[in-house]
Image 1 (cartoon, rainbow, N blue to C red):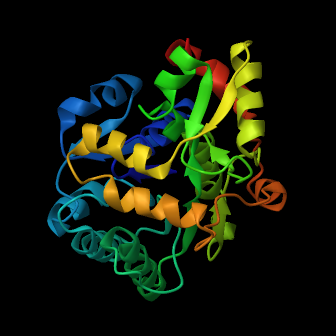
Image 2 (cartoon, one colour):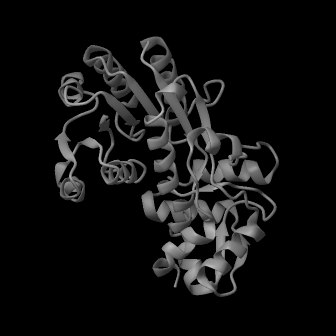
Amino acid sequence: MKVLVTGATGSQAKPVVFQLLEKGYEVVAFTRDKEKASDLATAGATIFEGNLADQEDVKKAMQQVDTLALHLPFFMPDPSKAAQSIVEAAKTAKINYIVWNTAGAIFAHKTGNPAYDVRLAVQDLLMESGIRHTILQPTVYAENLLGPWTAPQVKKENRVAYPVPKDFQIGWLPTADMAKAMIAALEKPALAGSNFIISGKNTLDGIQLAQAFSQGLERKIEYYAMPPRDFGHILDTVIGSGAGDAVAAEYQAIWDGQVKPQMYVDMTETLDKLGVEFSDLKDWVKQFQFLFS
């Protein structure tokens, strides 16, 4: 199997590249900036520098492979155009199988938010293409807990903060485990047509999340239900003024009981179909202990 991984230097795709290489597969890593892919090149990947919205670039990259691990950077200028370019190029190159990490939930109807609605467009493009494909929808990444809204408070205050009530359950998903799921799906084209929601092994409320941190760090950690407005203010400092307003509003809607997003799923059947094991969150915490201590 020769695999093209798009968005290869991103946090979700990079573990896929490394794990594919560890298993002995040939990998072409598609990136906008080859300088950011030096570690992938050192590990053995072939680096292809190009623009996903340029169909000719994508066609050239696909000439070297037969399978596509699709990660679409949704904060690029025109993700819909890139998706169309990728699918058309895949048809021309006769790519035989695509596994797509959606980077989040696919909603049943358009929401008015381009970052969400583009997933519906990509799903339609894949279905209309005639190319065999499997779709994986991750819930909430554990790496969100490495952000400035959580990690510093664990380190300084011995409390794990997140903007949801303490009884709200989340299936925290390490990116390394999502990469396992991607590769398992790539290795099993018989799963084509499947659409899996992928969650972490452990479904935890706030108290249980704090317990996982306590176990991983071997010290007492409490849970802090951070007010959504405070979470938004921190996002403003990281991304820019006003950037956190929409996100804070989404979490406030959870607090107010207006929405109940699916942030976890029982993974027993899915893991059995994929043939992989996921890690306990306490082990993920231990892995990143240097950021929490």
